[in-house]
Image 1 (cartoon, each protein chain N blue to C red):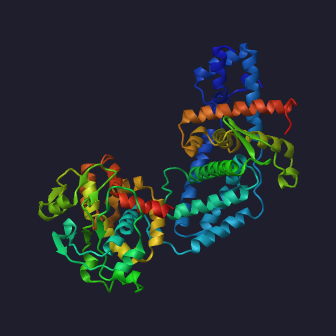
Image 2: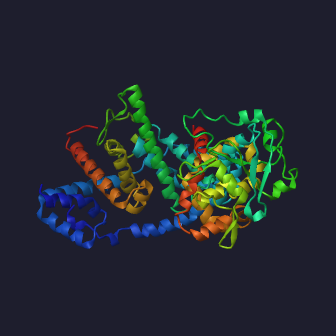
Image 3: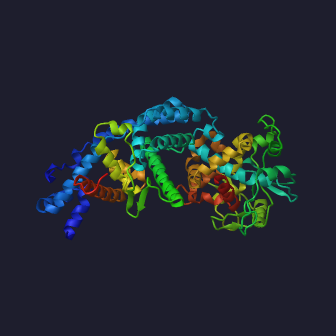
Length: 342
Length: 222
């Protein structure tokens, strides 16, 4: 078989399906007319193709469809998770992002600490920074999660801490019933509050990103730096050392804090296993782009978390910034997800 | 068949099929949304519409033994993914469902391979080779309803030869020739470039044709 035959035979399959250009097809036919070997191969191939296409599909066994339907009905009877009740992907993604933060940091909130937490309110709420002493429930922290014995040299990589409505996190873990929205303090319903827990010297180590904002510097920025405005929307101060705006958004809780306050504070805390599953199934890479790209369309929900996100998306209406959303996943978040995955 | 019998692509029924498919996609979309809102009936209609094709893909890819269980698993996975809004409508539901089916099948083939590596090959397991698999024994389907059907022997031979192809070649052949998807949709299902799909299909057909010829010539028995 010469090279021309090889070239023609490589095209025979596409020729059969009409996938060649008219010129290519004409060249093939010309060669086939003068080459017995290629013509034989072509006929074999055509016969095989015809045989395959004429072979009927195997009939599914009796009862398969009814079994699928029964299983589907059973699946649909299961109560939807809070994520499944959301009606748009962006809410799912946003809640997933919040859940990542929640599962990672709730235990830290509940860990015994004596050092102060710096609580940052979202920029559009007008609040700046407050420092508060918070007691924590030791047993709740131990029960909620155990930090894996990671060989990682970076201690306490995730320092993001959601501040749940008073009594909710600790009370839930110690057996108290969930606190309803009506029972929550009014400020909890209105002002999402997110805190940096003072959990270690590398409090904002975002390992996927590269940029690292050491705990002390970040805290100082939150306390002292002036707020900035982008696209007419005030956003929080940026870390001095070059962490991306997206990192800052997530780290300060401007995004996740609000989401947590609206949905998670009431529901997520009592359904963390479900939340873990949802988060685990949500590809990290999809969360950021959805938040930014679709944040505009989420009406009331957007007001809760995307005012500064809108500024971000106006600045970077493409992918460069959004592709870095995964940066918010810190080392311990990754470990939490890995554990959940296991 | 002479080469003159070939028709140009414009004459193929693909385009008309494509228009029909667009209508089907729109109908599916409404059912998908209803299923996402908890309608078991809507999902049941989708299952009714596609379970035969999905079963066919699974049967071709993995054989008949676990095909029903795997088909059920595929639909359950699809439903769970729908409820999590992991289907965004960027592809048709059918394409998306077939992708799940192919992935489940490839995972199942890998699982079988791992199990064979741990437990050692059995006389019933296919023998994995670099260029595909060789059946150690054709599954005994003498009591299967398929065998009772017309052309059962040919169908069995086709299935046995298809099962000797590598999973990727098997998938290309199954989607294009057995399910009769067009190239573009098959490439979408397999998440590979069009050119890759074409070359996989060409190789798969060539292997199938050669083995079928050997079977017809009595060189091999199936």
